[in-house]
Image 1 (spheres, rainbow over the protein chains, first blue to last red):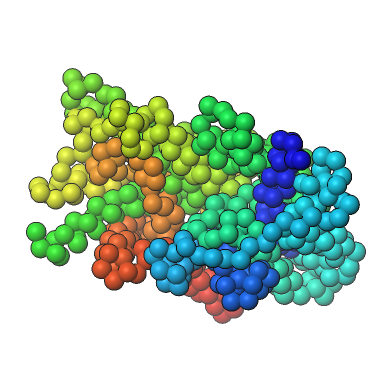
Image 2: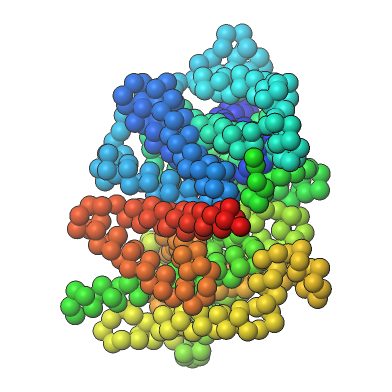
Amino acid sequence: MTSGMEAFLEGVVRTATPLALAALGETVTERSGIINIGLEGSIIAGALGSVVGAAHGGVWAGFVFGAVCGLAVAAIFALFAVVLRADQIITGTAVTLLALGGTGTLYRLIYGSAGAALNTPTLNPAAIPFLSKIPVVGLALFAQPSITYVLYALIPVVSWWMYRTHAGLALRSVGENPAAAIAAGVRGKRVQFTVVLFGGALGGVSGATLVLAQAGTFVEGMSAGRGFIAIAIVVLGRWNPLGTVLAALIFGAASALQFYFQAIGTNLPYQLFLAFPYVLTLIALAATHGRVSAPAALGRQDLELE
Amino acid sequence: MSQTTAFIVDTLVHATPLMITGLAVAIAFRAGIWNIGADGQFIAGATAAAWIGVSAPATIGWLALPLALVAGAIAGGIWAAIAAWLRSRFAVLEVISTIMLNFIATYGASYLVRGPLQEPTHVFPQTSSIVAGAHMPILISDTRLHWGFILGLLLSVLTWYAMKYSATGFRIRASGMNPFAARNAGLINVPRVTSGAFIVSGAIAGIAGGVEVCGVTFALYENISPGYGYTAIAVALLAGLNPLGVIGTGILFGALETAAGTMQRNAGIPATTASVIEAVVILGVIGIAQFRSRCSVSAT
C-alpha cells in the first residue's frame, strides 16, 4: 500500500536522480575552475544516444552510449574552453545550442519526422529486499530504477576521490590556486580537460536516465533546462558531492509537487508548477549568496595553465 | 510576386526580430553582461504589447502602436531588471538567472494565452487579434514586410552612435572591457552602468517582441519565439558586437532561417539544422579570435 506521502517521496527521488547525476559531474568539473554551461548539451546528447544505444544493445548499452555522447559534447567544450581558453560562458552556450539543434536534426534523420512510435526498452524499479520495507522512505529510496543505486554508489566514491586522493587534491588546487598547483607540478590543462569529460559523461548518463528510467522515449529539447538547474544545484550544494545530491532532492521535490497537486486535484494553473523549479533556482541562488564560496579560479579564462 | 522577391521579403521579415534581439545581446555583452535571456525579454515584450494591442480602445487610433511598443520595452526591461537586481544584490550569475527567466516567461505566456488573455471563444491558446490601430504599417504593399524592419535599422544606428560617441557608451564599453580599470580610472560606477546596460538590453529585446506582435503575428501565441534570443547571440558575436554589424548578420541569419524553413518543407531537412549552423558560427568566431590572440601573444 502506498500512501500519498510515499508516492510523493518516490516522485522526489525519481525526478532528483537525473539532476543529481548531472550536478555531481558538474561539481567535479567546477572544482577544477571550469564552469561548463554546455552541460545541458551533454544531457540532451545523452538522451538521444541512450535511445540509439538501447535499441541496439538493451538498456545498459543505452546508458553507456548516452555517457559517450555526453562526453563527446563535453569534448567540444573542452577543446575551446580548456585548450584554446575561450570564454567559458559563450562556449558553453554555443555547445548547448549545437547539441539541442544537432539532436533534433539527428533524431529526425534517424527516426523520420513522426518519430514518437519508438519502443525503447526501459529500466523498471527494482526494490531492494528489507531496505525497501523501511516505513515512509523505504520505497522512495530503495524501490527505484537501478540507475538511482549507481548514483548512491557514486557519491562516496567521488567524495573519497576528491578529498582523499592525490588526484583529487591536484584537481582542487587547480581550481583554487592554479599558479601554486602548476608550481607543484600539476598539469592544469590536463586535469581540467579530464574532469570536463567526466562531467560530460555524467551529464550523458543523466540524459539517458530521463529516457530509459522515465520518459521511455526521446523528445526534442527534453532536457528542458536541467543542465542549467544542475549548475544552480552545484552552488546550492556548496561544491561538494553530498551537498549537491541533497540539493538535487530539493529540486526533485519542486518538480514532484506538480504530480502531487495533480493527484489531489487543484484549480491552480499547471504552468505554475512547471515554472516552479525555475523560480526555486533563482530563489536558491539568491538565498545562498554570501554563505558559500566558489572555487577561487572558477570561470577564469585568462589563466595560462602550463 | 517572384520567388526571389518572396525570399527577400521573408528574409527581411525574419531578420527584424533577429536584428533587434541581436542588438540587445550586443549591448549587454559589450558591458560584460552575459544576457542569455533575450528570449524571455522578447516574450515579456510581446506579452505586454499584445495586452495593450488587445485592450486598447479603438478611439485612440494609431496611438495604440507606440503604446504597445513602449509597453513591450518596459516589460522587457523589467524582465531583465530582475536578473540585473539578482546580479548586483546577490551576485547571482546572470547566465543562469536569465535562462531560468526564459523558462518562466515561456510558462507565463502559456498561462496567459490559456487563461486571462485567451481569445473569447476559449478554443485556441492565443489572444484575440490586436486592434487595427496597433498594426505596424506595411513597408512594401502586398508583402508582409512592415516598418518594424526600418525601426530595427534606426535602433541599430542610434545604438552605434550612442556607444561610440556618448559618455554613457564609453562608460559601458569601459566597464565591459575592464571593470577594475573602469572603477579605478574614476567616475564610473561600474555596477550601476552594467545594470543599466542590462536593463536597456532587455528593453530592446522587449521592443523586438512588441514589433513581432504588432507587425507579424497580430496576437500572442504560445511559443511566439522560436528561440530568437539564442540566435541573437550568434547574430551579435558574428557582428563583433558592433551595433551596425548586427544589421548585416541579422539579415544573414534571417536568410538562413528562411532557407531552413523552405528546405524543411521541400527537402525534409529539419529546421533545427539552423541552430547547429548558429552554434558552429559562434564557435568559429571565438575559436578564430582565441587562435589569433594566442598567435600574437607567442609572437611578442
